[in-house]
Length: 78
Image 1 (cartoon, rainbow, N blue to C red):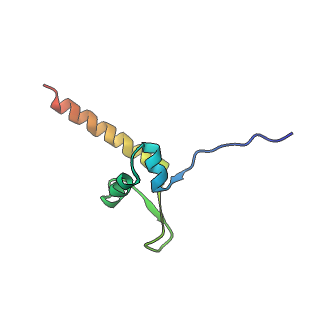
Image 2 (cartoon, rainbow, N blue to C red):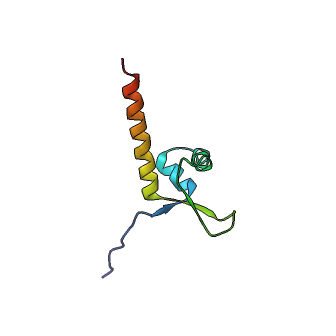
Image 3 (tube, helix red, strand yellow):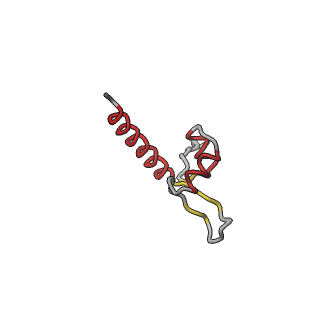
């Protein structure tokens, strides 16, 4: 009898994976990284080390966008 395979959600995403999760382009994610709007870190010490985005940071960033949009909508209502 084979044991069931457990599938876990990744804790870290590449910029491409983050873009796919958000339904946006990879260019958009890199722009948010470059402007330091989206938290990220490098796996390794070199400047060419792979970028990764923590899933929890991505969720928090999205929540921040939702909150700022909610405030903007409230300010724009007559």
